[in-house]
Length: 235
Ligand code: PGA
Image (cartoon, rainbow, N blue to C red; front, top):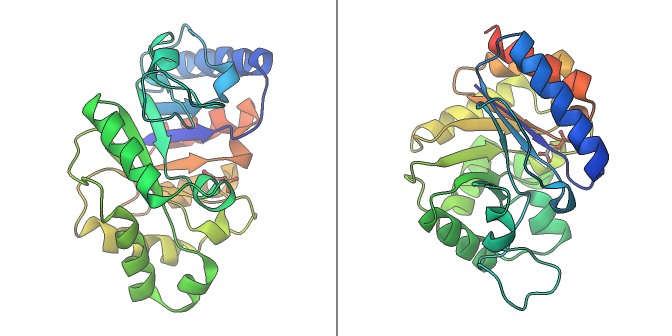
């Protein structure tokens, strides 16, 4: 199982360190072996002394080593901390920050060339969900159209936009049907994201083609995220 926490614009350098120390102790004490990914803010990236199954990733970085790209970071800044994991295509970056498909593709190809583990997010808006499963699958596959879905270090996170940060989780049937549809053409691990909480972690992880979860809001409390990791380890 892959259990991922996206901090978004939450936690400070200090509280990130505390979070990771607590999580690391919990993972060791409970002999959790699942893959755990944590995406802190760029300002909280650092060298942490963590169990080998806990990786730190960047929520975003530009497709460059270094240069004149105000407000961005590149691989020079990621290399300082040995970071080799990145989130690409999150709906908040697509919709709120207006990241274009072209930029997403460039990032994907750049970080793929460098061998990064890429968590690539896809997901439909509510109006597409309301038009039915075929439309949902077509929309999600279209978001994958220009990226190499056979890349060995790719993880795909299916995150319906209407379920992100809204407290509205997709139903188990909706998650199941969508992941089944994606699985027909995709070998990469498939995560579900969108209002995952401790209370629904088990039932979501039990879905046949679900290889893990990507969690925002409910993961920011280390006690809750730790419980999600424990639940995954017991399946
Ligand atoms: P959420 O966010 O858990 O707060 O819905 C999920 C995500 O954006 O990855």
